[in-house]
Length: 185
Image 1 (spheres, rainbow, N blue to C red):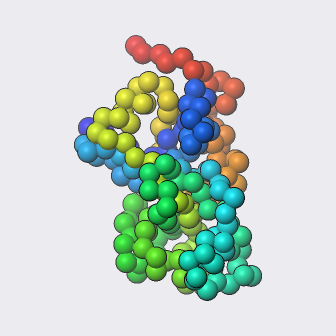
Image 2 (image 1 turned 135 degrees about the vertical axis):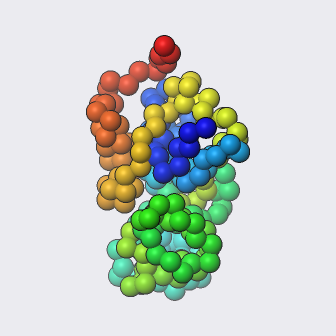
Image 3 (image 1 turned 90 degrees about the vertical axis):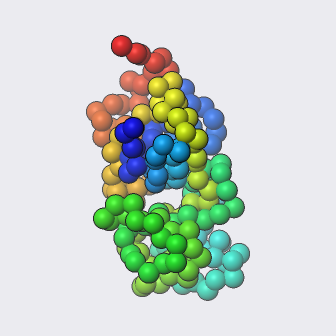
């Protein structure tokens, strides 16, 4: 089995589920048991400061991180936070995804997000997308998703609105070239 960990899923135009329409999802884990990804380009009407305030965590109101939008990471456990961030050790439940990328689910990272102790770059998402064994592979075969290697510039350096089109451009495709039809040789 080929693992798609550290790849992007790019929603095809035919995927009109509001949770995934024009989405780019970062695959954190993919193995014989299934897959887990975080949608990185569906901002909620909630900012990091709003979430920290709700959790009664002190924060720096002057920090640019306080004004960042929280993303809808997916439909599973949408009440749980996931912080996808540049590598920085020391958080209670961090998982290293690559040499330069980690995901953390522990609350301790939230205390750092608006301080000088924060990871260099991060996305805070509520929830994740999950697939059972073989389900993601079937969705890819059914032409619901394109899959490409992940790119940290797309994750962290583009606006949410730019990510889907930029991800498709990485493989030389313009959005108007995408079709709802699947082709199988």
